Image 1 (spheres, helix red, strand yellow):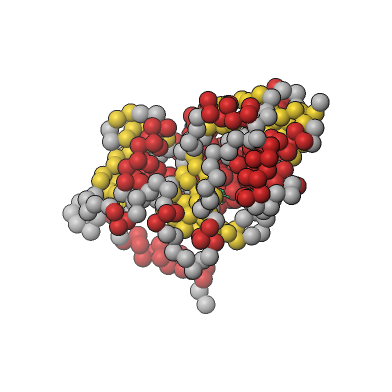
Image 2: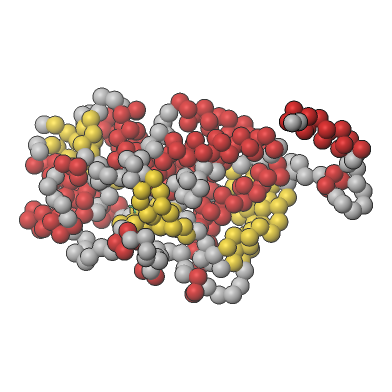
Length: 389
Ligand code: ARG
């Protein structure tokens, strides 16, 4: 019997996938990864087997996600189109890598996913599989089957006795992990609509936030966040705590029009308080610890890096080479940044570093000025010389 390993979320789409694949003659093994969504291994196991899977693997990948995917991203600071912290995008290669590992272990010739035929995630899953295990074929039931609406899928489940969680009308499509929440669909598809109250997933709406600033201090060691408010805790805990305090203060919501890999412009609302707080703190620390040319070049790298992540090219030679360059730039990125969170704003309060390149004796307009201003005149003449008309 042909065997397929399905990336299974427990949702409606992937539940239908199990039955559909079985009808095509496959032995279906499920794989579920926990990257920080609502997740109950017991529930997943029960539902997968009730839906007809012969076996299910469940893995908690939150640590690996934080240290091997989010952290490299943070060191680069790679926003996609200037606004997206790539929370969904970063998780896909990790899930796909483990999906392939399970397929190899199970000696399965196929993997399957529940992504639609017009999004980015199909590209990320399939490109990763094609790169890491070219001999394994991917099946994308949603691109093939004739179920065209949520109602039809629910009907299909009922017909086959597949347990479904809710028959309520779903307002949005939501993807969630520890790095952020992506919300799309419904009334958000009309650009004239301001995001309504019910599109807020966990960030508090500004109108409900009290008039009080909260300070957070983050300590970095070589680009890695190591302490929060003076306490040494692991990176996952830093993310969780910053998500909580950030959400409470209305931080980290962005309304984006983004260019999907397949050429479609789409609108997505993102909530990523911890990501934005850490991104801001890290950038501010780099501003005092890196020289002008490195800062400039890092920006170029970040642009390319954001495209590699967004476009499903995580496991590529170029991404690895860029990581090596970025790692080298982080040697001096150590120190502390204090940010003030206030009604949806991240405001820089303080920064300090033992590697600071800021020299008050050079920048001061007050006492103790050591800058030799007699050099400026000659410098400017030579600076402008090549451009004389
Ligand atoms: N547009 C985002 C990306 O491509 C998120 C995709 C999933 N979004 C969702 N609401 N299910 O990375």
